[in-house]
Length: 189
Image (cartoon, rainbow, N blue to C red):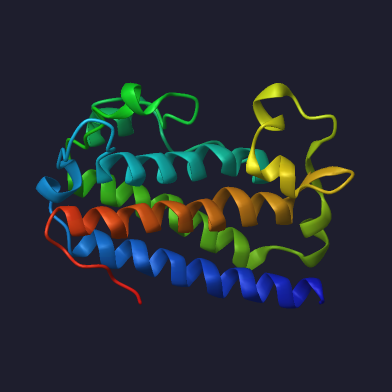
């Protein structure tokens, strides 16, 4: 498969994935997003903030661009826990809530648009550039992307597939399931 075809596929899949997030956001309220089901069950707010903030921060490793998230966004979105929670437990993140849903949606759109803009200008030869070489540091060694990586390490293609696309699908699945807990239906069959 040519790198041009891979980029085209990534662009289409990313647009489809992000359209699911747009649909989910437009059909939920702050009450749905912040709903507390029971101990051990993370709220939708966790999945939304986690995936958006993880894409934002991992984008720096892929592109060198600084994250959007800063103290100003923190003050606007007002997450109960100003942390994506990647290295925290469910018990530590169960209190995640979003304070300002409109500000959060604006943040998500900026992060997702950066991905689309970058993919639109991505040169085919960039896909094989190594983002994190082997041997991996301990924080990376236990990740899914480390399992996917080839002999040289995690490439741009690995990072986009694992950190943005597949990770985004995982959390969309959680969101779709959790929508049923708050009285909303799923969005895909």
